Length: 278
Image 1 (cartoon, rainbow, N blue to C red):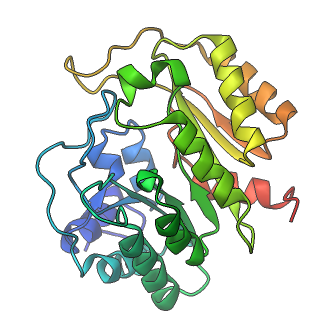
Image 2 (cartoon, rainbow, N blue to C red):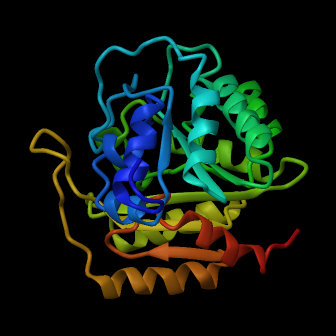
């Protein structure tokens, strides 16, 4: 086994357990930095997705039945890497009656059992708008419930044709009213063709439904077959959005070109903890 904290060590643990990470599957530009810090974002129910969002690099090949051993394997990897805070994400599984919610909850339960005290952020799909499925995830009490709206409503037909902006906002609103309360998070990609006014409008929408954490990053097209980059947003513009978001009442914001939804998730959460309204 490579030495603790090394990129190779994290990669080997993930490989040995037969797991996927969104770092690799989504071609994240930060994956080696995160691996070098001994972190990774686990991709559950994958590696294939049932939707055809035009921005995403995750495979669209036929999906397989959920692996019943994945929750335990994920918990083992969390323990082996030595994480104090882990991020779980998922592919969208419209083929499953609960969208994969029970599988996600079982994974959180397995991590709680094997790694007491480890914080969990879960980045979920819209679960097809299934309220009962969302309750299953919320009942597992993650520290952070994340669901990305990804882009502004006008671009949904081009970028997220099988998703719904209003459905995503409803999910976030239900999650923010859950008891006991948890931190609600969302994020957008910039450079898909949105205007400044549309970005600010979506930020307002997220605050209205109770989001406390926000990520903003530059969209990078995974290939020529994906939605093109319409604009590269300069760093100073990202900094301006961060100031706007904090003024709106977000408790912590990550906004810069290479930010992705799980980038430095623990630090973002810890920053927010000192300002939580609950």
